[in-house]
Picture 1 (cartoon, protein in one colour):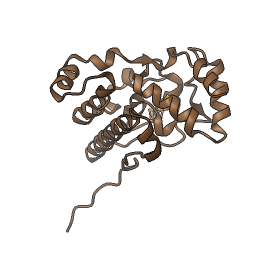
Picture 2: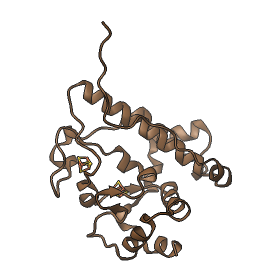
Picture 3: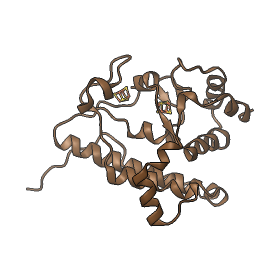
Picture 4: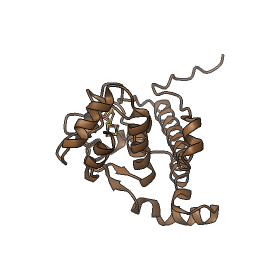
Amino acid sequence: MAKKTKKIPYPKPKRLSFPDDEVKIEWLSMLLDAYFNADQGVFEGIRHRMNKGDRLACAKGCSTCCTTHITIPVYPMELMGIYWYVIEQMNDERHGVIQKQLQRVTMEDPCPFLIEGACGIHLMRPMACRHFNVFNRPCDIGEDPYFTRRDDVLTPLKKFKDKALSAMLPFHGIKQKAKQKEAMKQGLIHDLAQNLQEIEWGKLAERME
Ligand code: SF4
Ligand code: SF4
């Protein structure tokens, strides 16, 4: 009898596609490729953990992490992706809510993209948010399980994570495979990240007028 495979409570990754904008905006395809690689790694990582008996705690409506995490790296191309998405693609009620939150956000506030317990920029959320997944029980209020129960936090599969980060390197002029390999070894891309909570989001709010 064929072995029954466990259903993964995480959407099977699909590369996002914005054909018209991908023609006009040079970096957009790179970013969408990067996110596809990251999502594949998360999917495979979750599958691996579930096969070992862990249960994914992250689920729709659970968002304590978006209020407690104080260091969420955002790479330059991701920041551009957020600008593009919010300004060009967001034509619904999220637009006004996010604009107001960006205008007044402080370091003590939850992430300015959080709307009623859900990520308002889910499709374009940063890689760090995509990668952060927790098993066995949801985070307590104020808890960062990375520090309280590291074993319950998904370790993104290196192969996919490296592929995702490498996909952003051409944006920084690093196009040759050998140079990309060296850049990854040296962790150059990480030096370019900004902390989400420290970004001057008021500038994006102005651009949303
Ligand atoms: S990381 Fe924690 S708070 Fe965030 S969705 Fe997963 S279980 Fe919920
Ligand atoms: S970008 Fe989205 S997923 Fe990431 S912290 Fe903000 S609301 Fe949460």
